[in-house]
Length: 604
Image 1 (cartoon, one colour):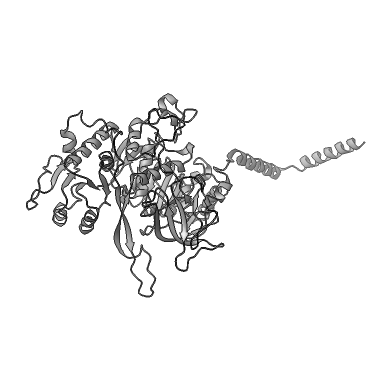
Image 2: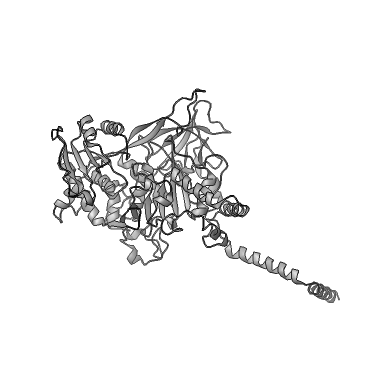
């Protein structure tokens, strides 16, 4: 009896429902089903587990008086050694044996040999590639070395030809008695070849910031005790330098094809012939074609000499109304701090950058890497070396570091990975938001995409309806917009670069469709002292974005300074960085920082 009553009530309910059905009911049900369908079809798992972002670094169990705990990457916890090198395995090395740390020479040898079989992931997918390939074709895949002239004209330099240039230039400078080589060039193939020539022929490489005043240039040459300069005509004041710096013994001009017919070997009158002048093209072209094809053997060679760089800092002038100094970017004369990095410092930083990228996203032969910031900055240099070691293709553009935004820096090419300076990144962001406007719809969709990043933990799909709304305002980065997948940018502590906010980084992820890695660079730190985790898309409050956690080659702490002291409730003070990637193993960045709740580093 109870069952019959239940069925009768069910029948009455169904009859009443459909008896009241009308057009509004159809619209509401259809809308409800559509929302559920869209949600289920578009739902994506977070790129990383939220708990991994809650504690991104591991603090030491105790802290010294006047200091905060020492923070390390979760991948190199306390008790383990920090990452010191590339773990290079020579032929015949047992699989269970630890590889060598390596040096700069091993990076170029890796460029020559290509992707080794041991690094092709299961399934035949090359690390960093979005296309599945057979292991047979993946092994030995080599990147390309390209030069862009800001138009559709892109010139490739073969790796074998560049190896020959490295050998011939290195041997030529060595034969002429050169030992300390100043490289005064824009981003170029010759800059790269000069650096490796110094490494293979045991000479000190001195990286001079490009386009300096004559007095500053002479000062840097004198302080670095350079005896050789590799530079280009039109940017190097030969007469002034020779008169003010008589210790110069050798000059190598890098001339373009249009000027190659001129006699660049002539020494101006009054110089006494004390400087041996030659041209890059003359050294390379006059040698037999069979010369310089093989690199010097590893056996019996000593560790490469140091790489000297100059850090462009600022001396702040005191304010007229207070004893506190004004912001470094506001005023002050430029200073050049000379820092000597060992080859071990650099390869440690390169290794940590390779390790910082998840396996499925690592650089590979399918990537095109563009250093859109000067190679004299170690952050840019280390990432470029990491791309070379990963056999990614690298494209050089001499004017890219001076471009006002990323659209100008990437004209004529389609990079997948870019290293840019904060000023260009900020200009790109502001220009795109200016085109977007402040309309209600634009503001709503931008906040929606931001919530997708922060709450769902995924990069918005470029094919979604909401993402297509931003197509008209996206920065034209490269000739194939949307191909960019990774953007590196670093705040240079004390150098007057604009510090970016978390909202700017989040908007860039939405507008470019790429991941943005934001780091903190210091004068005595090769690469970055800290940088954001690869899958961290959160928007932290505050004027400045956090710099993330330390890499596997660094650790940081805060040391009390003035009124900024560390306690159990609040950690703040001067930022101190230690590790094998730091010149002298420890360096103070001369800026104030704080440790956030997730153990990441940020400005106060």
